[in-house]
Picture 1: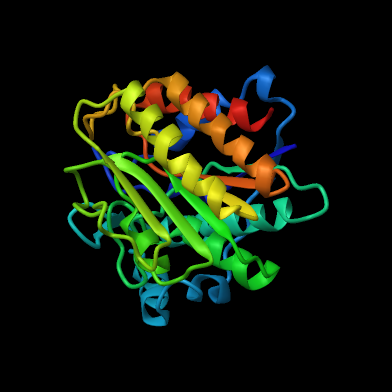
Picture 2: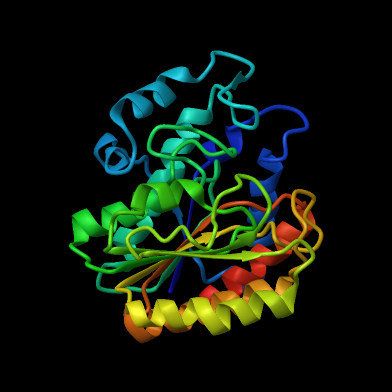
Length: 306
């Protein structure tokens, strides 16, 4: 069974005209999934994350600052790329809450997979800093919840966004119960994710070079990253699902195809079946060409439904 979590507030977060991380991104994904072949998906309105859930990965003063910062109108800039509008704090609460609710659902008796169609994205948010379009680190909140609320000992996070998930790495680099695996373009924002960044042996960074495509991506995952994930034997698989390594994406220079996203999703589903009783939660990260994003997210979700 596949559950899809989203919330109307995620469409109301608006960084302003011309911003790459626009509401149109989520609309494109949701419209692509509004098709007969996705009719069997269980569609669920995402709850808010609680303060307790957020404080597992973010500093208290940072959480308070984000929740109090939303402007009454217009936008407020947190850094060069990250802006808040009146609805942003509410959207961020539901984006993180979606990931938590999805973990609770797949850890239940029925197991299965979940996809969180939410924004703002999360994997750049550090314990005390908003950056890279991200406010709360949705996938990190989910992983910490799995450890604290479900008593898991091995949670894997697979991140195939074209940008390195520096925030997720920062949060878990000294937490051996979480394995963080990332493929990403380098050099590229945020200029982290080098191979020698290994945490306590629980961080695996695999940079790809500008111009790399399907062959290099699949060889990297098949030859290095998936074996590491299998050796870890995760009890839950979490996915930072960014689709901005697509060849048509304007913010990077990798050359993946829609089929590559179907391929990596299928491999991660196989991993979850082998070691995690099939339990997998995916949360939307990047992807800035609307047609490529819609097609890639559809391919991702199609594999999650199998």
